Length: 344
Image (cartoon, rainbow, N blue to C red):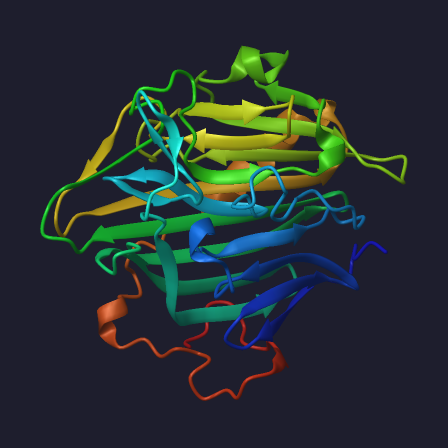
C-alpha cells in the first residue's frame, strides 16, 4: 500500500539499524552494524529499498557476489586493502583471495530524526583493515525525502579522514590493470528481474557495454518486476563538488543490474594524513519508466543541493562531544520522535 499523503516516520532497532516507513510501506532499512562475515568486508548497507508503491528495487547478498548488499559505500582498492569484499584483483593473477577484507565499523550516532516529509540519520564509523589497522574515520549522513506521489530521494553524504601515518590512495581494479572494471564507490545492485533492463543518461538509452566508463552527471536504470505488472526507475546523481565530477560510471544491464558513479574508475585519489575527502550523492527511486528520468534527475539534484550543505561537513564536529543518541536507550525497537534539526 502506498504511503502517499501519510508522511515518513522511522523505527530504530537500537544497536543494529533503522527502518524508514512511508505510511505502512517499509521504504528502506539501513543496517549500520551488520553481522557480516569478514570475507564480505563488513559495512553498513541500505536494503530492502522500495518504491512508494512498495516494489523492491534492491538485492541482498546474491549468490554470484555475496558482498553486494543493496546500496553500500564499497571500495575495492584502498592502498592494498579491500573494503568491497571477496577476492582482490591482482594484475597477472586475476582475482585472488587475500587476508585484506577490511571493516567499516559503526562507532556512534549523532542524529536520528524524522518529520512528515523526511528521515535523517548521521553516524560515525572507523575503517579498519583485516590486520587491525585504522585507516580512516568517517562521518556519514543519510536522508530520505518524499518528492511526489510516485518518487522519493535518498541522499548520501560522507566525509572520510585519513588517520594513518601515510598517504592512502583509493582506486579500482582498472587502476590496478584490469580494463573497464573501475567499480568502487556508492554501489547499487538491482533485483534479478531487472537483468536486461535499460540504462538511461541525459543523452539517451544505452547498454552497459555502451555507457560503462562514460562520464555523466547522472544515470538511471529502468527495470521490470516479477509477479506484478510494474516498472521502476533507480537514478543516481553525482554532486558537482565531488572529486572527478562528472564521474565515470560502472554500470551493467547484462549478467546483473547495477549502477555506480565511480570517482576512482581510472585514476587513484590520494588522501594525505589528516586530510578529509567528501562525497555526496542523490538517489531517486520512482514508480515509472525511462521517460521520467530527466525530471527525476532535476528533483534529486534540487534535494541534494538543499540538504547536502552541512550534513557531514563537520558543522557538527565529532570532537565537540556529540552524544550517541542510542547511548541511554536499551536494546530493542523504538519509534523515532526527534524532529530534524533538533539537538541530539
